[in-house]
Image 1: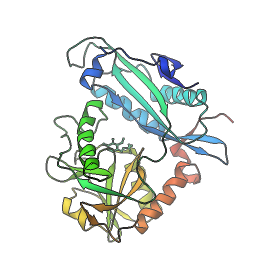
Image 2 (image 1 turned 120 degrees about the horizontal axis):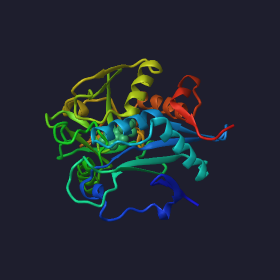
Image 3 (image 1 turned 135 degrees about the horizontal axis):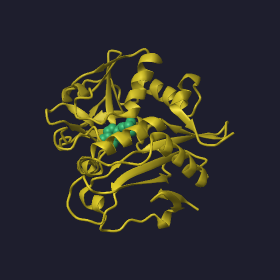
Image 4 (image 1 turned 180 degrees about the horizontal axis):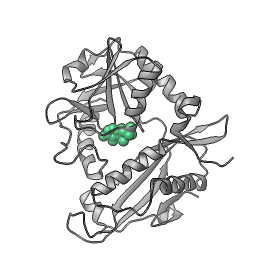
Length: 305
Ligand code: PMP
């Protein structure tokens, strides 16, 4: 039996249903998260990656939309552990918490409504091709601006922007889109942050470039600096810098570390996964499964031993 956390309790997934009048369904006024938990076969343990960081971001985004969620990050981590146990997960899994206004009322506003939180698990493997690398297209769609719908927040409605860019890329035969921000600098992918490598230096758009403050982005900056001894610059990144990059990769909870081997039909480096990207993938995938002692603090074990 698969369960979801819904309206304050664990219910069979088929019973976790909302009414069509639900306010947030109409206006996209929901905030959500995506977490991953990784299965460690040897230890027979499931590790949630960056549980605290994801739930703190969720609660902070919810606060920005005047959603007063009656749970702390610790409560939500416990609920998530319980859900994973109930679903008897013994493989890599994706976790989707969402906070929405459950009121059956019209009017797009953020006050005098009641927030509700739902959490469910989703079984998917790799989101993009991490083993061969992907082909991307610079989108004709601009990233939503911080002064329209802040890209810093994971707001459901803002994902129309991602959906437009991703669809355009897929229909043109690419795997993913890279969006420029309203100033014309590189922002991010439809669901990933971006890094380029040139002269043993990694460059990623700074947090003021209308991007999501990616949790994987942070982790990767740590790994690049500490494990690969690569300098990391956070600054505005021009579109043309993509074409002369030696390596490019995308980061995200779903995307993990995904190499980009082609941008707008131009080969990146040799057109194969670059050396730094491949070393980074190695250390990232070991860290998230609990195989590197100093990064154990990234993980929350699910099963009591
Ligand atoms: N940018 C966007 C637009 C995203 O949806 C995501 C996925 N949450 C990311 C970047 C990567 O963020 P994170 O590493 O926190 O998953």
